[in-house]
Length: 108
Image (cartoon, rainbow, N blue to C red; front, side, top):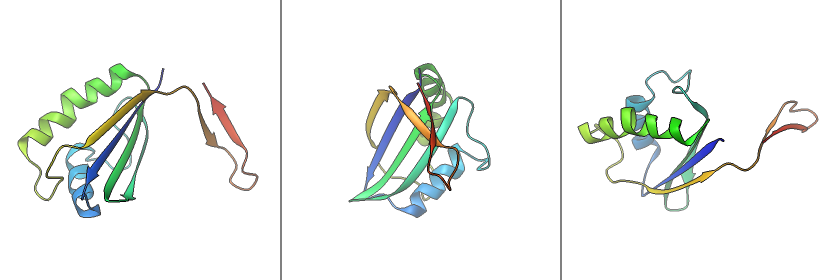
């Protein structure tokens, strides 16, 4: 089952996100193994990142093998404090398949 993570960085900025992303997603044309969706942007009071993985195990591998080790090393210009985190098993998601009709494809 897909697993979603929402990270909110109070006071976070686009520059901090770009620096952090370069360290944990160095190939910006492909997502890390197991990650199926990634979105980020400015939100009220900071910066929010949403990542969806194909499973909770996939998230945990990314977190433990890539994300946390690189954050512990320190990222010049990156986020300066841990995020507020929410996580959930994805019950339903849909993606658009045709932008002209607005019709999407639902997936369980």
